[in-house]
Amino acid sequence: MEHKKVRKLTYLAIMIALDVVLSPIFRIEGMAPMSSVINVLAGALMGPLYATGMAFICGIIRMILLGVPPLALTGAVFGAFLAGLFYRMTSSIYGSIAGEVIGTGIIGSLLSYPVMILFTGTSNQLYWLLYTPRFLGAAVLGSVAAGLIWKKAQHLSIFRQMKTLFD
Image: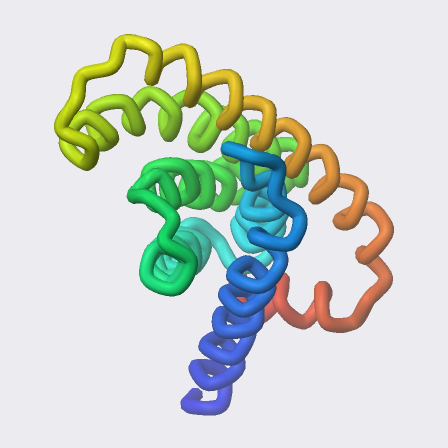
């Protein structure tokens, strides 16, 4: 039993490390498509609880180490949760992709507006125009990449192990 918990935490740590390291490397200004890649994969492999925890921890780490604003949380957490939830409901990577696009691209972007008003102290009406296209674009790009990775990685034993471990 303890062995199973240790393996889950190890896989969680690996996903966190991948997200934290890859997101700033493959970043487009104002967009983090690698975060969406990891959200989709984590949601499908680990489920909504672990994926949400992963996204939250990654957001906190990026905020502390990289000086990223609170958008790191509003963008990723909802996408990771819905990616895991939709995967569990559909048993399909397309469900995870849809969850990420809805959660990050739409919900996350809309919730970023009030968060940035609190963070900056200004109520710039252009925040709506800035966040939704960027979040949606990053979520779509990252989700498509995750779908391609998923299709190619199905034969890898680590993918099969993670899927069975978190079921």
